[in-house]
Image 1: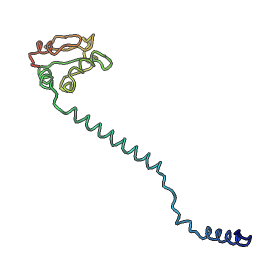
Image 2 (image 1 turned 180 degrees about the vertical axis):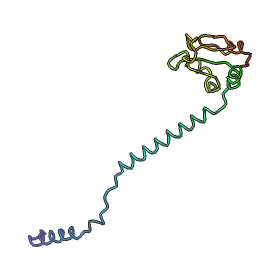
Image 3 (image 1 turned 90 degrees about the horizontal axis):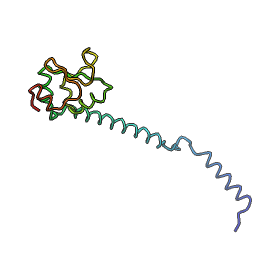
Image 4 (image 1 turned 180 degrees about the horizontal axis):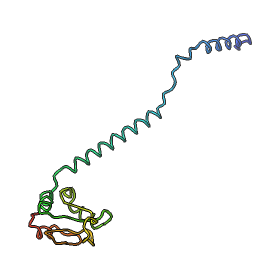
Length: 144
């Protein structure tokens, strides 16, 4: 059974009227999930960065095995002269790890007698190059 032209026309008219009567304010716009995802990802990344910095800071405050030795060196007046761009100075500092914060460390430009970095000033004498813990202990009387 086929629809007549009048019936088809009637259905079209009703369809158009229905579409025009729909209140457009009630239609919700789709949410922008991509924007929410980006903002959430950035927020999580920022939180993780701050947590990492916090743990790193707390880690530097923990007592290290060489803290007592480093404090003894400083109490005896020992000074380590180094250069920020010197790999040997970095190696010496790396040997002390977190305990390096207790060492009296200065830039080599503060003393005109420094020719090689690192140089240790112990009891008025200069000791050039990286020094072992045993050597520093022998020179100062500090216990490792």
